[in-house]
Length: 440
Image 1 (cartoon, rainbow, N blue to C red):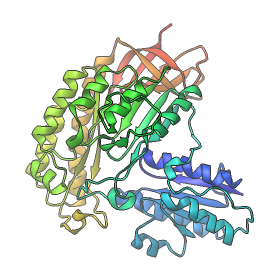
Image 2: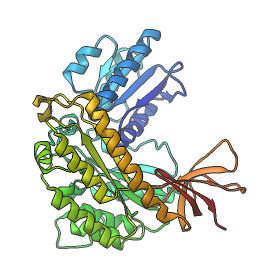
Image 3: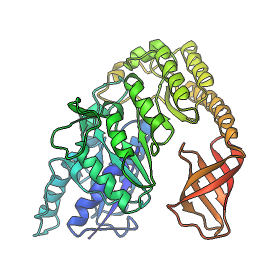
């Protein structure tokens, strides 16, 4: 039998999918290259925005219309919602959270597929499952999952539950093994990595500060930074209320931790932030950016912004546009507000029209293009280290990215191996990318 994965949303969902692959392949179910060949089709869903949810409904409908006998499984952030289950119950065979996937797939195999040998290990903690990494040079490593913040627009606390941090020893072991195998980039994942905490007892590793009873995120980064080898460490994502001076200092003093920081602001207006339950002010956020750029001059900073939050006035939106201009972000992920069931904002009046949200999005995108281009022009003439991600059909054309997550397109007549580091001189800057040529 074969399976096919449809993945929506964030990097955490891609990491979850790698663990799902391990579970299925332990049952000798092989990964399929196409939906047509697959017996199982697993949707790893995202519930952050209605647009992503609608794509799931549409694709499930089309698959069931053409393939009546395929087993469709829905997991991820939509799986727990009763309204999603009611809407799709005639098309989906199984709804299960990622935490319960190991147990629930066994039931499917026992009852529908008549597989007798289903004695594979069941996992009470899905983060202990060894993933089937999709990429040999970049690996996603969840360090924690869930969230305790309850931002008024966000479904994560309901979909993934309260915060849970992996033991530091498990993370260190996984990263060490990856580095030995030649992995070049480790991406640490969490809904709020800043809140990571692991008890120090019985870790088997020397703790940097023996007075501490727990390993916090900055401690974890220092432990990882001390692993021998040539590799990069990045992380997603940080909450401004928990971004500490110690964490900034740790990044500044490290050799392997990249100078890229994702720090979602969501709005440039204090009243909107209050209604979002973000628990910081614009003054606090600006001060954080100032500290980061002072300690890490070559840093690149990205942010997330929600436009059209309930009752966001034009004046409040202008405050967000003003902040975007002032902060000179390298990247901003701009999203129109989408009401999400179960959240506090679901009960608020979504009174900003779709047309107005679209207009506001264009305004912010125009600002971003200018600030991003301004930042990228600083790279022209410089030689930077690039991790090669892809080789184009044009045999001499490659793409990769820098330590600051700048995408780079370059040419090289000699054969270059994807997954290796190369030196590239930047010759041209665009708003969302760089062009260059390799340096011998």
